[in-house]
Image 1 (cartoon, one colour):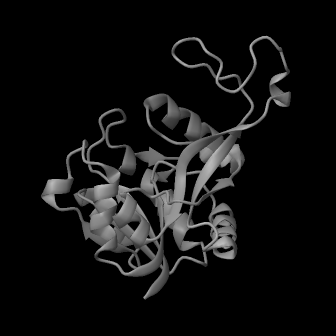
Image 2 (tube, one colour; image 1 turned 60 degrees about the horizontal axis):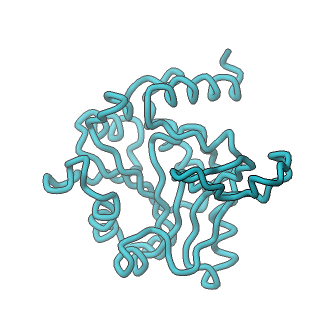
Amino acid sequence: MNKITAIVPMRHSSERVPGKNYRDFAGKPLFHHIVQTLLDCGQIDQVVIDTDSPIVIEQTHQFFPSVLVLERPEHLRDGAIPMNDVLLNSINQVPSEFYLQTHSTNPILTAQTLSDGINKFLQLYPMYDSLFSVTRRHVRFWDSLSRPINHNANILLRTQDLPPIFEENSCFYLFTKEILERKHNRIGDRPYMFEMPEAEAQDIDVELNFIMAELLYKNLNNLI
């Protein structure tokens, strides 16, 4: 049985950025970046792609023959299906002690950051039963009723002096099958928040994200 299996779920269709998973990103299809990153991470035993995309399936077989492809069943292909249902289908087919889940839409995430996160989790387990990546923020947040969330509106501190607040950036999660089955969630009862570099935490959700992430990727890799 694998110790750590990485899962990348990908749908063929994308509503806000059409075809984003296989759209060209800095010279190659977007999903190629995260797959190569996972393959470059020595702690990961198996990389799995869960998809309904014939393009992703064909390119994976061609460029990444060691990656296991699971064709997503019809009843899990609708965009409204919760991600946890998709993941349950995947982990039931690939036994592993731990699972790492990430997205094709995190192309700047590096193998070193994944490795650091995995090492931290293995050092702390079982004191912490799961891990998720976060981005530190020093900004003033307000709720929909104009109430301050993380600051005192009567005391104007510099933003860098505010107590940090952490954003779940969806870059990667580490969890067990037991947690996902019991809680229907990737985050367990005692999760560890793994702070990662903000530059790597870019997530492509809308067209502007795609443009900005590609520009940043090219800049970081001296492609411009």
